[in-house]
Amino acid sequence: MGAAADFGVQSYCFRHFKDNREVVEKVKAIGVNTVEVSGAHADFNDPEGWKDIVKIYRDGGVGILSIGVQNFAGEDAERDFFECAAIAGAKHISCHFQVDSYTKAIPKVRAWSREYGIRLGIHSHGGYHFGGQPVVLKHLLGLGAPEIGLCIDTAWALQIGPRAGNPVQWVRDFPGQTYGVHYKDFVFDKDGQWHDTVVGKGTLDLPGFVAALDADGFDGMAVIEYEADVENPVPALTECVEVMRELVGG
Image (cartoon, rainbow, N blue to C red):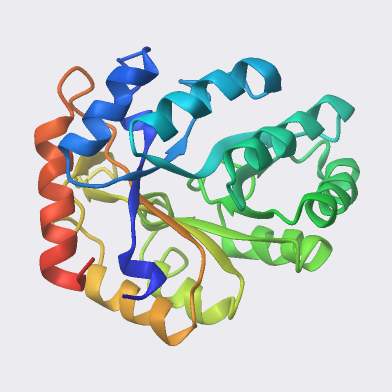
């Protein structure tokens, strides 16, 4: 099984539930056993407290693939993010950079990445967010590679429009630089407003995207993400897992 079909889930899907023990049970209930832990469930500036959370996941049989999405502004305290990822055995951090601090942040992040052996994927978060468009990503990766690559959030890539925001084409346009994937899907109103839907049942060409990842030799972190139904996300996430496995394996 290739890395593209070996997926877990983003803990942000369960943000309504603050007890990590409950999150562990919901992760397993949808049919996966790995997770990317978000800041909704941990303080990544508290490595000692994080050790207790990691134990909860390990004891529950859930592996931690990644943490994030973390914002890097080049502050020394952000080294803790790497320390937390290392404590969990994760090899990836999903991240954001900001227009007013990326020139300061990227050199520090690259140094920490080399120190810890942990890669970073810039999370593409739509047309309204710095780092959400290919031209900006190309510039950031030009400064940050090979330590920094992409974390392609497929739905947010789609949000910027069908020509610039084609996630299948992004994999091809950034060969070898996709380090993380958020499998997520939107449907759109005629005014462009987006709505979460089950992965593979919206606008995303899921088989085409996975095929592009496989052709590119993707070996990174992959999770599904569904942000609707906040108080009861398990049914839709279970369907996401079933659709993923039907269409692409896993």
